[in-house]
Length: 191
Image (cartoon, rainbow, N blue to C red; front, side):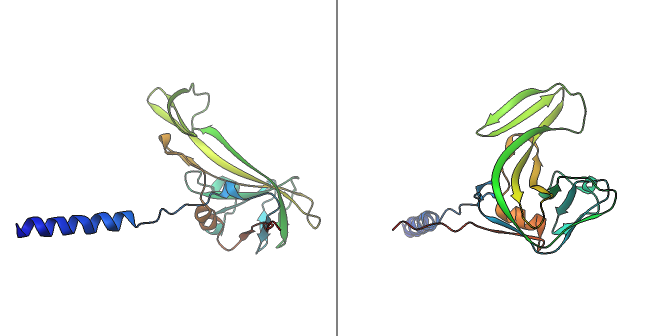
């Protein structure tokens, strides 16, 4: 009888602990609103012959080819290719538009894909015994009067199987470190 009483009290305690937990809503990078500001805190270098300055693991990569697409990454993209390294200055850029995108991702070329799974917005493809996954990206289209050669910021990550999802803001912050900051657009309060 005493054991049943203790078991009942313990069960009630565990149920009350689990029901008082608040669900943490993660914010996605794609939730950023047009009109927000992308601040470049430290100048970024676009290597000669390239159009991207790549960031991953809170550091700038020497070349876009070093990017590990299986981990969160971001790339600042300019409009023109130069024969010399180009610097993106430490200034603010206006975010004009935010676009979500995904594309099949495989390391094999000319693969024939068949869709094998669909869970919400997440899809997976298979070719023979190989599973082809999605490279999920967010594009922030940028504008600046001070640096008109800017095009956009592309952030993404490849996902294995049907687990693909958009990038969370904390993953964005982990990828760009102290190089970039997003300043949300101010919301107007109705009178």
